[in-house]
Image (tube, rainbow, N blue to C red; front, side, top):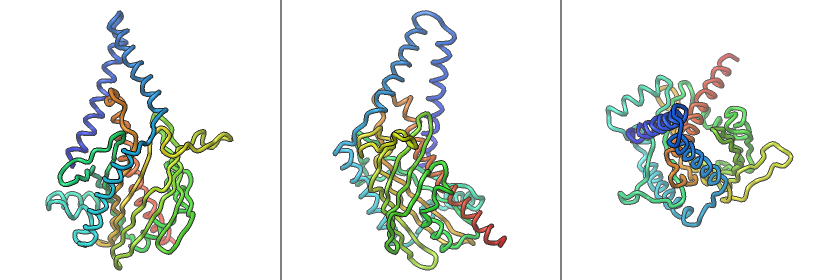
Length: 312
């Protein structure tokens, strides 16, 4: 799986180099070759702008993603039933496990790209892309109870996760079950604001182990966010930047702190045909960056809370 992650960055670098080479060709040459090169790039950009403005979530895409998600959840449930290894990092070979634990104790994030297979075969999702990542951080000095209190404080997520989360609110709570509203903001070439509702369930296994899972129940892109003309796009009839988001969390208190693990799955629109070199690196990088930001922020915010309590 580590090779897949490295491959993504190589594609990103290669795409960047190709873009720079094309621009250099235009700047350094005159005549028909330069004009043809410019026309090709402009045509690609025009096609991108058109396709970005139109994407419908199709029934076959929903069905395929649900199959991928259900297969993943069967695996997650089986792992939780076994109990050990509890964290994903503990399932790695000894050398990799030792290296990752060393990184975690240094305060670094460990993150990998995953893929769920169905009896050894890739699960195809026509018209969409599945982004499947898992990441872990270690919070020294944090207890399991403190970590769960922080995770369940949905009314203040915008204070900790700004600017990625613009608004957060608990709509309903029944014990360990939450219905929460989160409004996400992302700016990377294109600015996107997405309003979402999530059904979240927590389970305390014992005094040192807990898990939770979250599934989106509503996702709507926001047009003209913050403006008097603000409106929500119809579900599944938008630009396709996020059609589903599902997360599986595990928490374990040990080694003088708490480990926080998040397995994240999301569904987005597919990359328009012929524009993979241009759009691919952007589309595939956002889910990884979002999970990285989330876990790093969980760690830093909880460390600040611990320091504040000690200072009192």
